[in-house]
Length: 158
Image 1 (cartoon, rainbow, N blue to C red):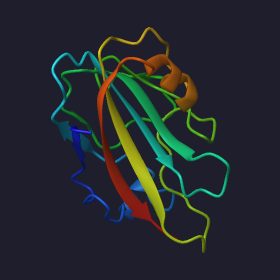
Image 2: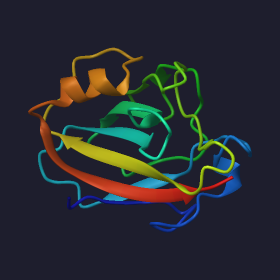
Image 3: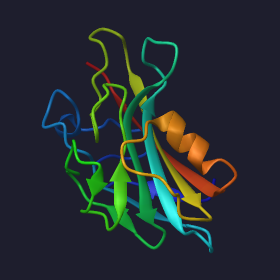
Image 4: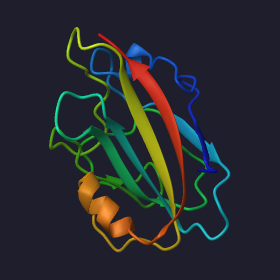
């Protein structure tokens, strides 16, 4: 992983501020990156919580068709919109609540610290997909086209 994914909202491994959680305003944090490999045509982002008490990680955000030359994602991405026009040409997918867009950290009370993994993937070709994909469909569409990836982990506990 050579892509450096960061946020001005929290340090790597640090606590995600309440503003970006279901206990706060539930808005997406700002993200920026560097080290995207040459030949990147699109980027894709999946945010999940592997500490969720369920068989599979809880998916908080699926965002894809991000232009390969985009340097960042702004704070407070609009939810419930498949077309993510605030990031030129991007599309949002379905989270584990079966909603479109970002859903902030919301671990069960008393369940301890959860780790939220922000995975950014560099792709060698534009995906030929519509908005609304879930993470499994996005991973299948990206198969064989991931040039590199980066990860940022934040934590949150109730």
